[in-house]
Image 1: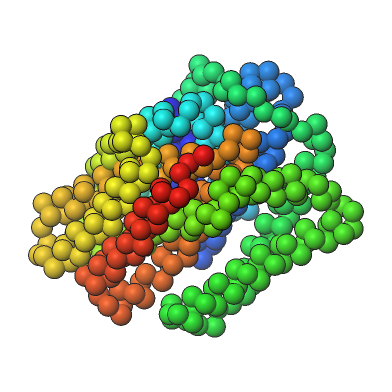
Image 2: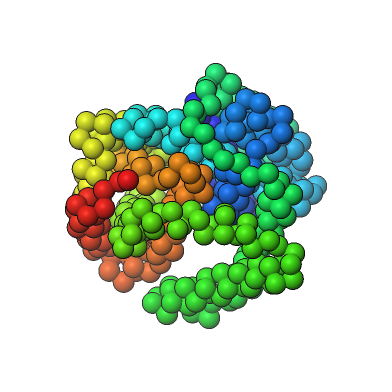
Length: 470
């Protein structure tokens, strides 16, 4: 139920919203700008210390984690209601503010649920919680994506009518009550945490972090890449661009500290100590573990970016892709996640992590085979099913591994850092996958993405021997 609550809002911020705005006649360039709301999910680790350390008055009566969770769930509902009653045709800026609030509170909810799950049971039971969380998350995404579009179509969304989309988003806000119900019938984790009494200092820190994120986005959007083709030069320039953005944000925080506007002790408490705790526990192997986190989903993510384009160019219809990839694929992912959770409980985290990485890479070879065959719906179903099962298995294994790496002292902060690191490099490289296909063709591209997963297998074998989960 909490996984459902976590998965429901994300597509309301992305794909469903883009359809609504397009139907409302908003320009394509403006619609794509709304994807910037997704930065909330990328930068969520920045305000995770606030969630970890500060207890909320009144809401904390039901427990620290549950109090934060109830507040964010109510704020998601409130933001969805605000989004629903505003017509983007009349004021696109209000829609932008509302949808940014949905993304921000949804990302905060993810921080809390991850921490709540890790703190609730010991490592050997993380497999059960992780697989069920992933199952709920996928169902939530299905309802928020395909379900909301089906409702829009059912209520007459072929022609633009604000009342149709108002009812869709109001319905989605009501479905958030499932997560609230789960919260109310749950128990607070019994593990004690030390909370900060410097609420004003933490709030000031949070505001400065938000300003630093805004600076990052503004700098990034105003540096134009001179390389139009997505080649190696473009990739290296993007890396340089990101470094400049990070330095700009860091310079702002540095100036706030020098001007005595920001207390430097909060920076240490929020970021330095969680990182130091991780390094102290794993020593010289900490960098290897971070490398594994960065590379584990590489083969899966880089391949997945081109999947839908490949299906279309192969000759499959949009309805076939929607039915077998988006609908049945969700249930195949859930099955894979359940298998992953079972394997972790039965055989241990590291063996499950190895199997997940292996089958995720091997499934890419199925796409290489599909590229050589004639268009056949049975082939498509077989490959999509196998790919989603392997993806679900690997995803569950990885969530269990990250949960084991996380210290109870810094649950929300460390897990948010790990999960952000997990997708940074794969997403960055995936942006150049189209250029890869242009150069080498689909078959060789899919084989290459499978080969990318080989170093990860050796990393897992080595780390399992020298740096087991502590």
